[in-house]
Amino acid sequence: MDIRHEADGSKGRFTTGDGDSEMTYVRVGESLVIFDHTFVPDRYRGQGLAGKLLAAGVDWARAENLKVIPQCPFARTEFDRKPEYRDVLKE
Image (cartoon, rainbow, N blue to C red; front, side, top):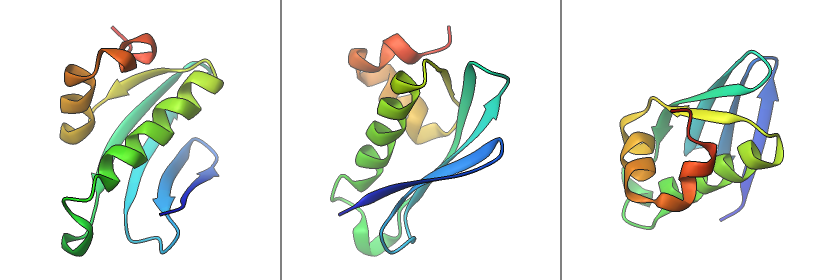
């Protein structure tokens, strides 16, 4: 499934091609971003889609030299489980 990045000022989201699944964020200043919400409809659950949305967000944060506060429960859990995301984690 194709993942797109949509940004509008300090807010944005990573979404699937159909727009039903998303991970949203808010930029705070020049170097910080908060991942605040992840949603995947029931029909897509269990397919790893939320993880793909988060991975796209992490890749974007790396490319933009941003630190991430994973406020969303899913993102927080994934950051705790995956040491490869710690380089962008705001401690």
